[in-house]
Image (cartoon, rainbow, N blue to C red):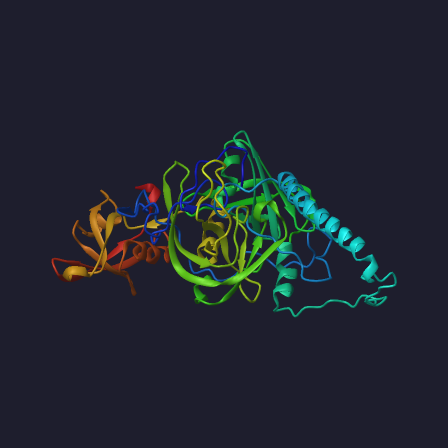
Length: 463
């Protein structure tokens, strides 16, 4: 998402939509260090809500899209890219047209220069019979054959999914910006990033437009936001049925799986990029609403080109099912004068749909999301120098679940249920597999002795 404010110089790690994204935990030497030192189950960073076991899509099938126009039948349909995955907010459509006009002017100058050179060469070569007044390269025929693509091809998937990816525009006292979103229910619910719409939460407007009908903007209302997971849901104010996307399962992904990114990079609606799953379970630090940084856990890394404006758009698998919400990109930074964060370098990140589905369901039901936690401050403990890998408890939150279960500072948590954990990040991810109110068994070591205890998860905001 973009606004008219001059952004600060970009760090090595940027946010595609609004503001700058922080450096991931494995940022290269010289980049800002991610504040992963001490992790707090209750507070900063929060324990996010987990996929609660729901495997069915949030949407119900529909047959008629909101806008009657179908994607073009000739060639591959256009793809939309997510709003602002990294760097400054993406420009509004009208601004992108100005930018395109400038680029077009530059291209036009180049073409004019080339035309002049060719004309001079032609005149000089008149005596050498370089010109043929009757030249013809034949004809392509009087009829145009229908262009069909297999359903499993990129073009075939694009034709199905494009109508479920929308462009989001935000106007607020602090500026304007654009982003992307994914229709998750035919009655108007759209899933996007919190950083796409957060500027409108305190007084502003949100409008949605559809690929194939970009000139028609429909008002939308924020249903709920979750800054901890950078997710939000808006509802389009229309009586017409939307075409909901099919939601897949991110837990089934493996490195190397083909993926397609759909959204509106740089305000260019209907953009499609392809790539693969480059890595799984990444932890990336992104800017929080209060000015600090919030870890984005368990992210899907992809080399599909993601640029500012892609935020909130869809990352789709080879079946055309949404398996992630594009949210962040790594960037090498940009000019300290312009504040430009640069474009895609082939390292983008998406929120897994298993988690996004769970958060979206809570936002639609209650307007807010809960985040299961055990209530500890912990550091990652490694096996170096004879230590034990796990999450080292620095302190237990007073009257929190861990303290009530008897955990103490110095305990090293090594498993949640049947899931082994070797770091604080893995502890958080394992807890996210459950929901508030669930009782889990923690395995931990105290003074070298292995022990187990049952803990009932609570919402981190309540402690």
